[in-house]
Amino acid sequence: MEEEMQFIVDAAKESMDAALAHLEKEMLNIRAGKANPIMLSGVKVEYYGTPTPLSQVANINTPDGKTLTVQPWEKNILADVEKAILIANLGFNPMNNGESIIINIPALTEERRKELAKLAKSEAENAKISIRAARKDANSEIKKSDTSEDVQKNYEIDIQNLTDQYIAKADQIFSVKEKEILTV
Image (cartoon, rainbow, N blue to C red; front, side, top):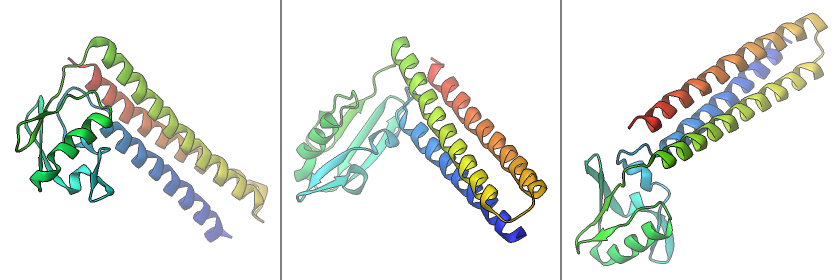
């Protein structure tokens, strides 16, 4: 009986960990004004007829805080890389110098910063929803178990405490990102 209950708690914790990991990944995709190779992580290039992640066909570097350089391993795909960056609709204007692509990261306007902060808040809310869903699943599993009501209540309290901890972590991740976005 004890093992079954512990398994339920562990499964809930695993789901909550996954929600936070997803939140952190999504927060990396929200740019805060500094150049970062992760900004191009969603770009797919047609490479021999197959959509391939940009990072698998080129080196992506940040020579300074406002510039990204993309140097394809094969010069003949330079135009395809440039086209893929434009199609990705990231708000970048790539410049092709014949050997590599240079992307100047535009400074964020106040309006754009607020938009990005809203997007970050939305991602944080989605993570909280996932955490609460894990709590709901765990509580319904606990109710189905053959244990006494007292034991069930104790485990539900444990699950609630776990939920509160993970929601606090999601809030902390959001507040750090919000501060990063709104800092000029």
